[in-house]
Image 1 (tube, rainbow, N blue to C red):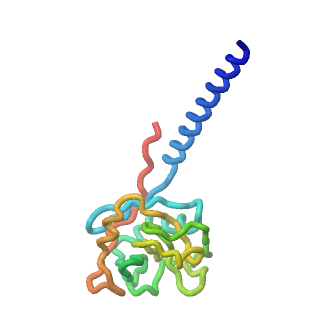
Image 2: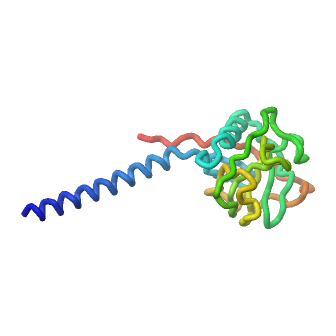
Image 3: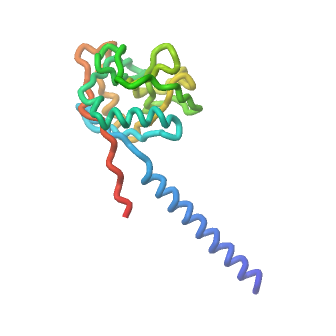
Length: 184
């Protein structure tokens, strides 16, 4: 009888732990932050990755809150590679008034939908420019900082006009932090 009771108690503890883990996972999902990138064809939802690049995420969030990105063009869009934006001059040589960031390279891979920070030749030269990969780009791994990933709306990124620079470049309509979900 004691063995049966012990087995039952173990089963209840296992179920409780499993449910507690799922509740914790659900709570973590609610804590995740997202940016909403509005383009001409629709809205792109970008999951922020502060676990990989906390300073880069903080920078992009600050610039988005200031509406820095609104109206900026995609000045470098290479078919099969990526779409780059975030330069107020539209030339690829500009940035925000903030100081450049130190690299936050990670073991994550650049894949379709990865959002990375553009930089000049020096690893610690990222500022405001970023890019979204159209395809996997393993040659960027551990060379550029990953700060986000597209989780919805990649088809709208695919529609960005190509060119270096494009003849008629697409623009960011707005880039905003997604309001947190109700946690009632």
